[in-house]
Image 1 (cartoon, rainbow, N blue to C red):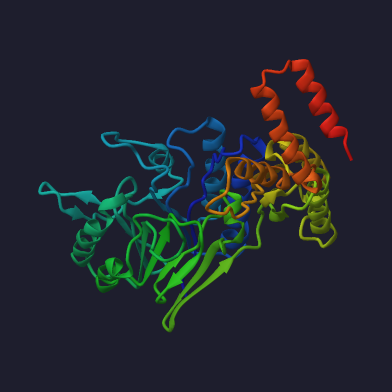
Image 2 (image 1 turned 45 degrees about the horizontal axis):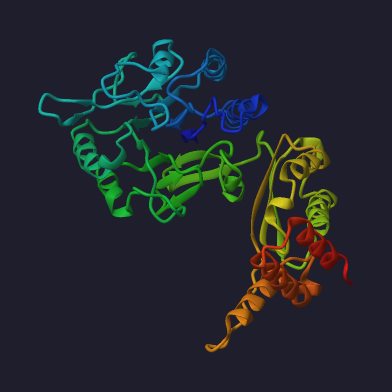
Length: 417
């Protein structure tokens, strides 16, 4: 029975964290996944459903990474079939890109439908240089597409019509399409509805291989998205993602998500500030959370993980008093992280004492000062006393007392026990 490997969103050249080692992770993940689940698994072919590269313009070293991987497949006589994604598609009016370069170098089969004179999508068989579909010796037809963006629903109707004009498939039909399905992740605009894709199934597509969303999902037994080969952000640490090792049988499709290949460990930690901690206690809590993650093997320093620590809640001091750079560096050293992200998202603790409708100006000032002082851990035990002192200080100012006299008053106020 035909077997193939489905990958998407490889993002070679990823550079979001300005780390050369992190950029290499995406190459190592791609290379190792191919070695384990294409070459060692002896699949008939490999498909890449878009976003091989992170950028349209790439460095020579990134192109070389792609060539290394595809050359290994070629040496093992495993065809690599790809389509463009939104990250690596050619700009409007441009005739070539780096995927086309790889295709011209006979390392990749780049499947792209064409358009007739009246603008309709047309599929021509791959002739060794160009084409929109290919019939493989293993008895599988693979059909390509392009990145259609917001026009995807309209393009699907045209794609389905073009597929129906093709000669009978030699067996199963696999189609590659770079777009996301709604309901899979939050805050994703422009996702397709399931009903938008049904015309492709009705046109004879048995396996719709998607890309674009970095989380793995399967829908109705014929739509498959493996997710990205490597996480593009710490937020993706919780996603199921990997590569699909697929077998096409007479009984149906067997797609197994494979994740056991090289991937950088990503760890997300959290500290909840409740407003009662001192600055020193909050720093100690952050260190303790990292130490606990290490002792429980959630975080493995020997692997140089990527770590995010999020400090949330309320603090009983000026939030700017925490030296986040110093704490971040200390935690990075402690965890031996390749990248340590410290997200400090707290609010200053606030108090709001209810005021009577007939409260006097002095009473209002007293309560406002008291609330401000009570929100600070350094002064909360003397909030009432210090609030009265601030009112007295205001009166001294109104009386135009000298700066020296007011300074001595403040000094005495703070020294009082």
